[in-house]
Amino acid sequence: MNAIDVNNLTFSYDKDTILENISLHVEPKEFLAIIGPNGGGKSTLLKLILGIEKSKPDKIKIFGKKPSKNLTCIGYVPQNTNVNTDFPIKVIEVVMMGHVGHKRPLIGYKKEEIECAKHSLKQVNMEKYANYKIGSLSGGQRQRVMIARALCSHPKILLLDEPTSNIDTVGQREVYKLLKDLNKSITIVVVSHDLSVILNYATTVLHVNKQAAFHNIKQKKKFFTKDEHFCEVELLQMIGDKDD
Amino acid sequence: MIDALNYEFIQNALMAGILVSIASGIIGSLIVVNRMVFLAGGIAHTSYGGIGLAVYFGIPIFLGASLFAVCAALLIAFVTIKNRDRTDTFIGLIWAVGMAIGILFVDMTPGYNVDLMSYLFGSILAVSNEDLWYMSILVILIVSFVTFWYRDILAVSYDSEYAILRGVNVRLFYTLILVFSALCVVIAIKIVGLILVIALLTIPIYIAEKLSNSLYIMMFFSSIISIIFTLFGLFISYNYDITSGASIILVSAVSLLLFYVITELIKYPNFRKNENR
Image (cartoon, rainbow over all chains, first blue to last red; front, side, top):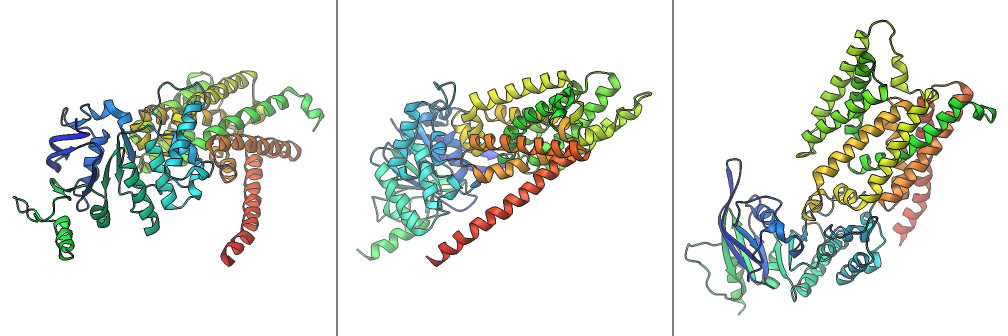
């Protein structure tokens, strides 16, 4: 079964069509990068997959089910993690937000939930910071905490919206190394402007600008698809080929 | 001051001060972290409409003000839930309209006119036993709300979009926070008056925020700090015969200033050390 299935999805706010006839099939353990110009509909597509924006029924399936029925399957890392940095909240509390809220104790958190959150922090190498205030961390560290929060519900798919847009290059490399490790067991979908990701980590690339075009990074050479689509991916592959 | 404690109205004032401080410490923390200070101000002033209506129809003031404030809170929740950014125009509107309604009804009330000043600046020395009951029940409700639903409240306040994804009913909790703010504002009016309510809901919270790395600790500190300010303000108000609301707020403001200066002084050498490293 595919991890994500999107079939002929068209979506519009009021009269503006944001996405037109998008079809997308992501197999388990793939590393999909979604690129495209600002306002091209990348974030909207992500929100539709998450179920924050509602589409017509049966257009989107997550492991064969509706997105809202499969909340625990998806871990989400939002775009801007620099908001609300004054908020008095500890790292561990942020991570524990990732638990889906049923079967919970009357007050506070269950022991397993705390253990699970600590384990997630360990996965992203942030266990030392569990009791730090979230605002005292650097952008890259905060991003890793947000990934830990997403990992908390043991998702099969991890969706990240511009995970490296607010952090320095060292932090970026750390985040991608982490994602590559995680990719051994879970499917990863990244919305990104960062072209180095596409070449170094992604297995497939989707270019979204109202319509979508697929690129399989593993098969090089074929620069122009049938519909004469050409974007950064082809360009980069062409440049890459000169080195061969 | 010690023999003053024998008077029932002083005992009631102290009890009311403590109860309102607990409520405003908790709710004020929620208001501040949710960036709803202006909303709370709007609700406080709107509730004057409820006071006017209660005076006109002869129902208990607390009841009238509470109902009116809760309705205002629900209206604000309904309007702001979708878009929390562009709401100030609307808040400004109900702020003024609520007060206008209040003044209108007080004017229309035949004969005896209530003391407007006591609602604008508080009348902590006129707390009745019924008022104390009402305050106690509200404090119990608020404490239960934040104890049993702490994780939902935390999720909604910190990152509401993510909370939706985790299946938290964000609209419900956002509305509940506003409704409790409305109820808390109404009891706080008794202590400091509706004009000064905002100070009680922000000054202790501002200090507590700097001292805490967790929301529940912030609520706890806010309540404790509020209690200290309120009781000290009452003491000054009693000794020097000053309006209690004003003395409580000024005690808070002076303390805030001191706190700010002290923290800056502590921070400065550390800052220099970091720079040299």
